[in-house]
Image 1 (cartoon, rainbow, N blue to C red):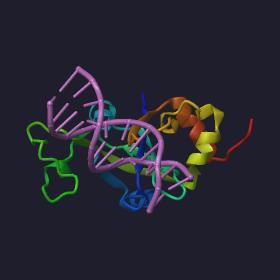
Image 2 (image 1 turned 60 degrees about the vertical axis):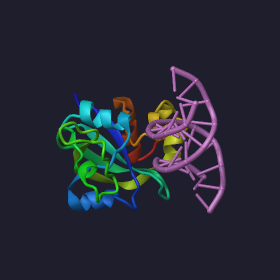
Image 3 (image 1 turned 180 degrees about the vertical axis):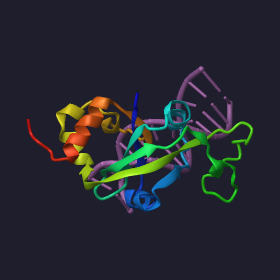
Image 4 (image 1 turned 90 degrees about the horizontal axis):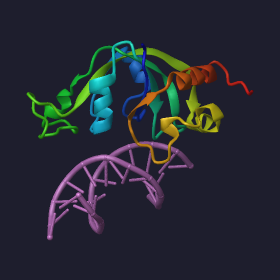
Length: 157
DNA sequence: GCCAACGTTGGC
DNA sequence: GCCAACGTTGGC
């Protein structure tokens, strides 16, 4: 069964256009335990991911990526020169994990956070919870379908 | 740039 | 184990 996710990136650091260019990227630098658990324990190859632009103008969902493999230890945690270096993460007992992501598509138009907030069908979405800061979070299949419908043209009901 | 909300750290 | 201080996230 395909699972759905949402992953945040600041487009200045890495945007959907960067992923479109690279076709594939390793999602590293996550230093939050909950987000790590999702990537290490729950993500499966083939899972689909909303690529979210945070700290952007406007913020919102920019496109779709696909999980390309199971999670594996984040090498940036082992590299003293890397900004995400974590001396507590040992190679034989890694603290941090990431996943490979593959480009699927860029939305014709980014779906702004504002639009998501206004949609009553998405009222329960994790992303919209107050103070939500998780950079990797699950999306329900209902939320997934709804958002994909918004992308192909929002219709009022 | 501001600042609220949150996670983490560290003194006790 | 509590909790204040601190750093970070992320919308605005």
